[in-house]
Length: 215
Image (cartoon, rainbow, N blue to C red; front, top):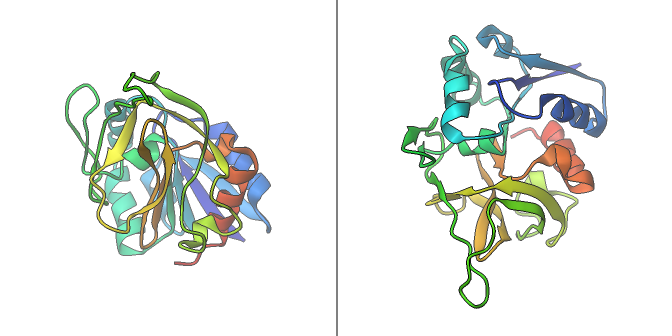
């Protein structure tokens, strides 16, 4: 039986994420919510949700003794498939600019910066970006997107967004006063700005693809 661990950094919709993972699975899974670094050893896949401010989520992760090092060993050294959700995805960046500068895990190039969405007449659009937005991507470009079509909707809640990604690392965008990074990925690492656990059929498809993924 495959073992999936969901890291609890003190934020995130953990119960909903767990239910969504269990619902998306096409085979029996052992799904664990974890706060101990040792629990990452032997995991077949790792998921890290996050909600709220970048700095608070980073502080919550740092407060878990040995977790950042264990994550690096599991994901960057042993190449365990990793999915970051919302702020869990943002923490993959080099830094976040929410209420000051906070270092990220720096696994992927880029930073998380304030959004400044504008409408057709140059008017400021409301923040946070909240609600259902269509995804734009090249069909067949990544296993995470299998079974989806451009325009399929996902549920977003955020006021900060990824910018400065390396070429080819943005797997999907959405539009909110201009293009907004929706999914990033590199090697065995993927992250979604939107909440897969709240994104109905689109989110379940992405989770199912992630659980089946063998990068």
